[in-house]
Every structure is written in structure tokens, then in C-alpha cells.
Length: 98
Image (cartoon, rainbow, N blue to C red):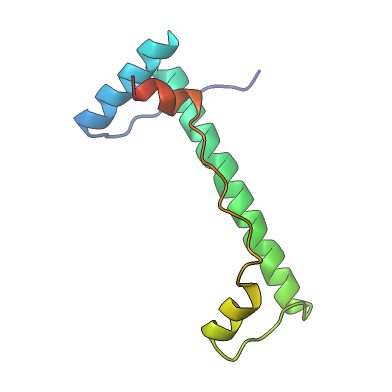
């Protein structure tokens, strides 16, 4: 099991109340909700950082295409882009809306 430490930070009252509402809906404490939120943030941050690193590696390896204009880029991809993914709420955000 990972070692846990206490941290303190300031948060506005509205956010604290919302966190408490989520915690109550999940029958958990505020620390659980905050740990889940931090974990989700870190997962997203790591994925974004990895995608940036991959893109930089592609550029350094010459795996890219130059476009004369943004319009040219749009024209190439017009109709090819997949529909935006439907966003689903996590249990935490769904609980906050109750």
C-alpha cells in the first residue's frame, strides 16, 4: 500500500460544498473524492504529455506534412474527422449534479 501524506491547500467555499455533496452521494469522505479527482487529473496529464512527446518525436523524425494554409488543412480533413465522442459523466460528476 502506498504511503499517504497530508497536504493542505485553499479552495473556495462553493467547491468545498460541491465536494461534500459528491462525498455524501457516494457515501465516502472528502479525502476519497479528492484522491479520485487528483488521480483522474494525473491520468489525463500523463496522456497529454505522452501525446506531446510522441508528436515531437514524429516531427524530429520527419513524420509530418506541411500545409500552405489552414484552409488547405481543413479541406484535406473535411468530412474525414470522426464525430466528437459523447462525453459521459463519471460517478463523481453525476453525483455532484444530484
